[in-house]
Image (cartoon, rainbow, N blue to C red; front, side):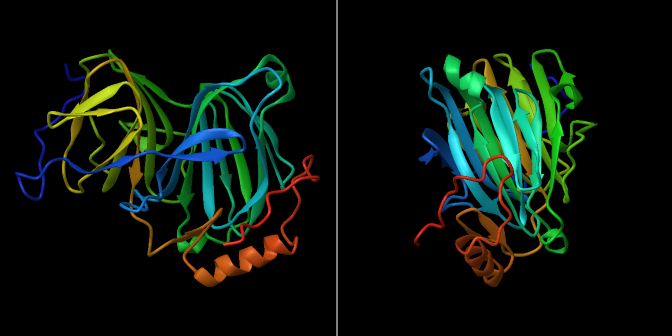
Length: 305
């Protein structure tokens, strides 16, 4: 059953499949919790302006435990944090202190430089927290890489939702499916949560050149190929595409216009300039980044590599 009008797939070559690449998640440690990393990968560094994608959980921690991502720096990017379960307390060097809860969106623009920390709130830690969500980074256009840093929180009730009968969509950032999120970013992009009943057919937005779908839970079928949780599907450009939920599923859709030129990434730094990254390394090493207010005692040292 399809929930939205859709034309037959049209690609540069009729025989080409809609999916260009499938990326498998790789395990990484994030402050005591194992996460699955999808971007960047050796096969594909970016999708639209998205240059980083981490899937946290789902995990149930014991009472007294929690995540502790100590203060660390960013430049020339924006972070977007979105939770399905649990709470994370965000603090940054602008003085922001904000609990991130399921369905809300935290968008932090690092610009010329910001430091922040992410920890389990004390009340959640006492009872034994559950955590499940995603964090993505967005590379900024060259004209905005050195913007003043900023932080914006958008409560869950401000995120536009669409109920299409078997498909519940939330437009987390940018524009898609005729809806626009309060989180717009600085370049054309879309970021959508799709909760789908079994058998639902959903087309991808055609108005963004680069698009991907990450299977968070469940399974989806594209061109008769089955894809399960932990897989990021990168779709071919100039190719209409749709997928079918093979079982009840949660899928995150993302993409947009490619950025204006190559981006370099090293640790928590993203920039169009290698020299700018070297300067950021030195700034963090020598303590020239501003401190995270309310979390000044600890920090993550610059990696040795």
